Length: 205
Image: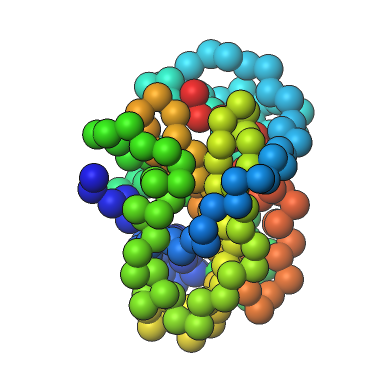
């Protein structure tokens, strides 16, 4: 199976760049059954966006997923390195890093369990993420299927600052999904609550 390279997006006021790294994982905890509290979304049309509560809802034209995002965040569905990219608004003139969420989807050639899919994508990550420190990791039941979520910190490439990365792994209809949120580790994350709402709104169809 071709390993997916999960994209981490680092956006500054000077540079818009895509940096890539594989993601680490611990052995599965098969006893975990935690399930996020997904906010309600009501639109079921394919393609485009509609407002649902605080979030706009985007439905993939190919019918693979849906996701919500705040109208003040920048939404792109035509990027070079991911299916979609959602970027936080600026926090002021001195804001040189924008939090962001991106999604990657991979066609799986063989039937795989979520444990196999996660493990296949994690080899070698500690050589790429300097000072890697895991904050939390768990398998849980999500929308009737087993998924995996991890949060970790570290530096990537020539970065002089640390980032915190939250990722969700899921499998549906022969496809692997990786949803990623990137924030700067040493700053107060004013968008963490909103990012969690976006994650909770995501549904792989």
